[in-house]
Length: 175
Image (cartoon, rainbow, N blue to C red; front, side, top):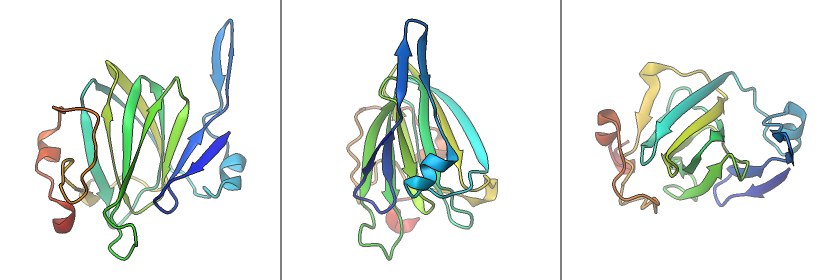
């Protein structure tokens, strides 16, 4: 397993070990002891799986009262995954990092609690699995508009497919 620290505090890209042979491929997606060794020492309480088609953009989402840390993996296809620092007291407030994640590159992105998260689908479709450090609470949904010029994310798609709810999200300064 390879770990790369990102420019945002606590955000990490993890490249899991993958074993290929004539039967196919095997990778261990998560092992508590290995993740504790790389300072991802969280109790994951919920797993989510999302399937989306090409050019779908989800986000940027976060929770205020019950912030979720997320360990994102792609189980089919490819996405561009983004974390945004929304902590107003942080030296990296408003900064973002992005990483291509796919089943083929077997990379994961760990985003600690307190960040906004979003992604867009680059392949024909993608299935994403993410582990969460906190339960989902519908009344704690918050977000930032995907194309906020204050953040200026360099999305690798031009005309994303966005939900009505996500198209009405505020900018970072108003969130």
